[in-house]
Image (cartoon, rainbow, N blue to C red; front, side):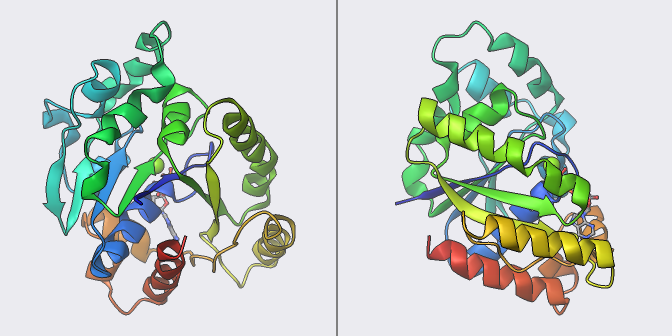
Length: 250
Ligand SMILES: Nc1ncnc2c1ncn2[C@@H]1O[C@H](COP(=O)(O)OP(=O)(O)O)[C@@H](O)[C@H]1O
Ligand SMILES: [Mg+2]
């Protein structure tokens, strides 16, 4: 069974895209066949993967709006990618009156799902239709949470959204867990938030080891490579390896 994991948090800048690319890369190193899907109009994942999104003629947009086959760019550092670009920002409005719009991504995935062990969906930072499409297509939702009090406060809304979606459209959607991100253990406030995340969320699903905050992440994305190809010995690489081991056991 292919695991289709949506990386979801309605807040921006919490590390969704960075994790999508890096967890995907470590899944590939463990011999999994992995497809990444960029469904954020900001197209950060496409950019992080080294693709110039403005040059693209076919993106996820044509698949969800025009119901065309997914345009898959193959084997970027071992990863396959369905890219996005800014055109996708129109999809929200264009899909308003479409019939059965919620299943557009699920349907598009049907014909490729058997080719992969993991499909990771990088959701936009919103609760709009593109997020709904993603959560309907997914078997699991994985939630990065920044270890900042303000970010943690949004968790109730996030969990409500997942619960409502389960009820309405995807009964089998499972929470794969919560990944605390950008954690600086020297900061008292962040340590308190991390502890609150562990206390309050671990009854619901796995709370993974936190991803440390480090400049190496923006540095690696500027170079358009996963962290492990930029600084293979950085401690965060080990953290991601451990998370991937658990994802393989889902
Ligand atoms: N652990 C981290 N430490 C420091 N910076 C990070 C970390 N993870 C991501 N970043 C940086 O933070 C910014 C936002 O991350 P991104 O993955 O794009 O978040 P999102 O997809 O949730 O908007 C990017 O510039 C990224 O390089
Ligand atoms: Mg992003």
